[in-house]
Image: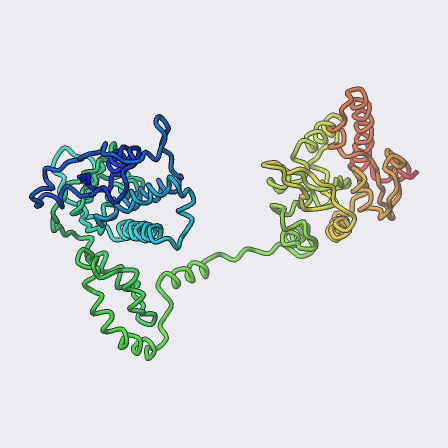
Amino acid sequence: MATVLLEGRGDLTEWREAARPLLLAGTPPRGIDWRCRSDAAGDLFGADAGVADLSSPGTAIVAAGASLTVPKAFLSLAQAVICHSDPLRFQLLYRVLFRLQAERALLEVVSDADVAQLRAMEKSVRRDCHKMTAFVRFKEFDIGEGHARRRFLAWFEPDHHIVARVAPFFQRRFTDMDWIIATPRGTAAWDGESLSVSTEPAENPMLTDSTDMLWRTYFSSIFNPARLKVKMMMTEMPKKYWKNLPEAGLIPGLIAGAEASVIAMAERAASEAPLFHQRLQAVAQAEPEIAQPPAGTLEELREEARHCTRCALHCRATQTVFGEGPQDAAIMIVGEQPGDQEDLAGRPFVGPAGAVFNKVAQDVGLDRKDTYVTNAVKHFKYEPRGKRRIHQKPNVGEVQHCKWWLTRELALVKPKLVVAMGSTALMALTDSRQRLADLRGEMLQIDAGQSLLVTVHPAYLLRIPDEGRKAEEMARFRSDIARAAEFGRKMSPAGGRSSIMDDIRP
């Protein structure tokens, strides 16, 4: 029989290098005695045995020169099982490895005794790793001079050889401080640059610091006697870890006094709200009341429209984009709906189409400050495409819902001339589905003393691909706006209001 001595500190490579030649030589599991070197130290014969007779006769189970392969799941399983403290793990791993050469689907047979034992060992190691991440308590120790970073030490007593397996977790979680985790099964240390792991057993440093009291305070504050389940608590916090947990000393007393605490809680009169709640209430009461805008003004209508939910467009838009301009403006410009930039800015005609309108208006002498500018629909309708919001034309129902606001704007501003830019604005103002091309450039009487000028929306001009046609359409748009500007000049005190109606009637 071959005797194999291993350090057995959770190093899979060590076991694999020993197992490989044995498997290639066809050595059966029963022909190998796997031992840990520490366990063999007191053995009169084991200490000198070493790895013996690796080339003992056997039936080769892998062809000469062929590579040794195993399912990927076995390697993952073996990395966990090799950390188990049971000395029989080496024999079990080799037995499963040997069988896998003929039974490739062995790991899928959960009822197999060897596979079930491997799974149980893996679960035990995994649970031990979880407990280590939960129950390590760092304590700061004196760093002396010459150390810029704070240093911490923790003592933990794992069941298995898991220090190297769990150390990367603490490196990721506590990378901004130097720390050492000492255990009877090895030590892990992090200095901000490198993570070192030793398999040498350490001794309990018996450190205490001020954070012990913090742990006790925290634990006692989250302890709810009304929901006490001792068995469940013992499952999550096994008693074997208590001796190294500063808060564990409180547990017996908290459990013993749970019933009395519950009775006291039931008898206690309702208490005042927490202090932070009182502060919030005080701040809320100190908030100055926002002055309501005067009734019957655009400001009041704008404030009301901010909370508009008349159609579904408000759900996705950033905000209501209401009209702006003087309440006594003689000219009202009505577009279709706010675009992407208008939706973010909360103002109409500040995007690319607004820039076209502003440039043309300036060229023809139409002062935007004297004009009321708004849209037929007050919320941005769009379709998201990646990071972009693509404009979508509002439907008839959405236009009709938003006409509630446009009608009230018209009633308050009472413009002498309304410029409908685009078919959506034309439909909102006239309730007709006439072709814009049939009415463009015409002055239409829509109410007593109120006229309508129809033109295209400046966004349409931006989308014309042909430069020649684009220039032609731009000239027509300039002509339309120039006609509105001329209307405005005649409406000004210098121009005289009396002569304008004769000019604009069709």
